Each structure stands twice: as structure tokens, then as C-alpha cells.
Length: 182
Image (cartoon, rainbow, N blue to C red; front, side):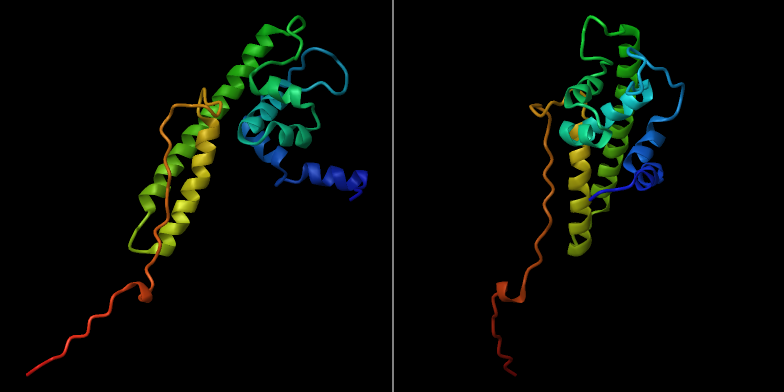
């Protein structure tokens, strides 16, 4: 699928573009650039956006979406502004790490609140609603797991499994015939 420059620009500027939605979460702030002063340099806010996205999605998908290398995505995700330790500006790294950590914690807290809300709304008397809320809870739990501080996939934390109730069918009941004698 080949797109013209105008179509690409239109898609990039669309308000429902993931980049624009996440930019609203990160905020605008001051746009400081570090390191090389060429046109491919990322601002601190852009790096934070990339790092935050990598916490929720895969590094490969994030790299492709933002047109950066997977190694850069990993660096931004951990709060580093550069892959090279010798040329890294520690002050900018600290700022980026704090920004990414703060936003990940904010997303984590919101997701935990929404997970608890979905669990509280489950009503076992209504199987269809319980199924819907269990699916919502399961999806939110994935976000909670990905944004849990210090969670690298090998955590000793408690895992919650939400199972939807299965409604019984008429064939599963035993029929007992009772005769009425007068």
C-alpha cells in the first residue's frame, strides 16, 4: 500500500492517531533536544512517549510505529537517552527516567482502579454481563501486569485468573417424575 506524502501527513496529524493520543497523556512541556543536532534527534517528550508505549506494547511494534531502532526503544523504555554510555547526558537520562516512570505509574494506578471496578460490577446472576466484565477485567489485568514496577515477566506477584461462569443447559438437569395421588 503506497501512500502519498499528503496522506501520510493527514494520518500523522489525525487526532485518533496513537502517537497523538499518547502525546496528550505525556503532555507537551518544554521540548529539549540532546546529543546530535540533526533532524532525526528526538525530544525528551518524544523519547518518553516511545518508552511509555514500549511498556504497553512490544519493543518491535513500538520501534516500527515510531520509526526508531529497537535498541533505541529499549534505551528509552529504561530511561536512557542514548545507547552509548560515554556520550550519554546523565541529567537528561534522569529527567527521561522520571518522566517515563511517572507516566507508567499513572497508567498502572488507573488500570488497577478500572480492574477493581470491573470485578465489582460482576453479577453471577446474569451470565452475559459476568462474561463481559470478566473479559474487560482480563484485558485490563494485562495492562496492570505490563505496567507493574519491576515486573519483567518473571515476577513472584499474585496472579488473578477470572473465569466466566458457564450457564447450564436443560439437558444437564435430571428429570424426576412425580405422580399426584389424591
